[in-house]
Amino acid sequence: MAGPIGIFDSGYGGLTVFREIESLLPEYDYIYLGDNARAPYGARSFETVYRFTLECVKQLFSMGCRLVILACNTASAKALRNIQQLDLPQYGAHYRVLGVIRPTTEIVGHITRTGCIGILATPGTVKSLSYSIEIQHFFPNVRVYQQACPMWVPLIENDEHTGPGADYFVEKDLRALLAQADCIDTVVLGCTHYSLLLEKIRRYLPPEITLMAQGRLVADRLADYLRRHPEIEAYCSKGETRRFFTTETPEIFDEKASRFYGRPVQSQHLSL
Ligand code: DGL
Image (cartoon, rainbow, N blue to C red; front, side, top):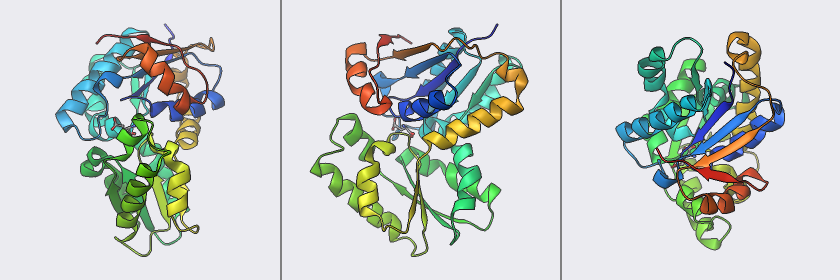
């Protein structure tokens, strides 16, 4: 039976991807699940991120989703491969889990002119080397420089990202990235939270550097995926409904979520 498309993130960041997906593909039903009670995932171990993400994916499957998007780089980096290889086979042919790193790495090599790319991400994503490995796979001549930004997600989640405290950390981490190589001409926001810091990041980056956020990119690739996989698309129901679930209290989620989603959100609590 057809069901909604599941969108998962550790917390709020996935909403920046979801808003682009639903604006491009409004006809489908969607369930958004934020594991806010256990966020942030960014500094957690591989095993923990895998365990938490798998629990959430199973939950979305049990709510009728056949296709789940991990709208979280940390989960895509640390859990996606295991879930695809170890867990999905138990579910059968028409269950799919996709991430946000691959759609980004497939494109980024076409954008750089110097062949030098900077990645800004959580410590977990950086340590996993997922961006470097995937970009090398598609563009063997491109060099990848990474910078972990451990304070950015906590600043955003605590609504401090527009204040002067955020300027300090944004400038510090961008300086550390650019100090790694003069040739960096393209910088990827490798965390779905970071688009809320876009303005500040832009302010501290030289204007000639191209800044890439993921939302629209992931939405385009999903539309393409659904076109190329009619057997999966057939399992995605089209009733234009959106439901939001959080492992935190809905009042807290709803208040913050609208900043990421751009519109009011009414969520329900979910215990895992
Ligand atoms: N939004 C997540 C990402 O894209 C990270 C947030 C977290 O650390 O939980 O990596």
